[in-house]
Length: 166
Image (cartoon, rainbow, N blue to C red; front, side):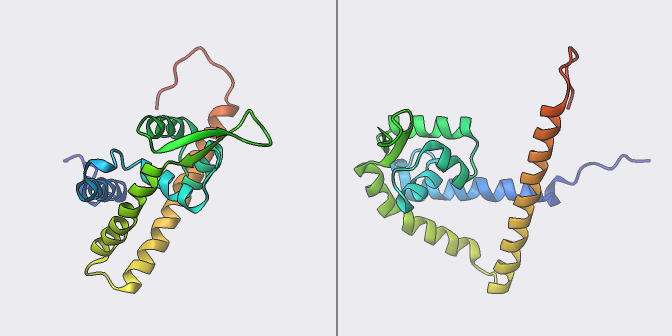
């Protein structure tokens, strides 16, 4: 009897990952070196919508975990795309603002995003897009719930000297 292998080619996770990688690759090609990292895009978009957000606000809105967002913000600051300023009411908090350089980038970024979405939709009906979008949002909700439950279960475990195995 032959052991059944995982069907990677039809795995939703594999296909979504492949689509995301190709989306980033095409965006980098279209923008050239002016946008060094696709991870900057959600931050630029959220700050365009409302400049002066805190890192915690961006984490919630962009659905990016705090350590990842901290690294993105650090790199964007290094690359001259954002500036930090103390919050006027609470000097312990930092607010993030897009630089002039980031605003110039956004003038090129937005049409590239629109063009990329148009290319992705090519050959798909409005109904196909609607069904896919709804299904994809549900998949995201499912995975977020799974992560919440897993983190909650792990945080409720008593301390152990044994090493946990996945």
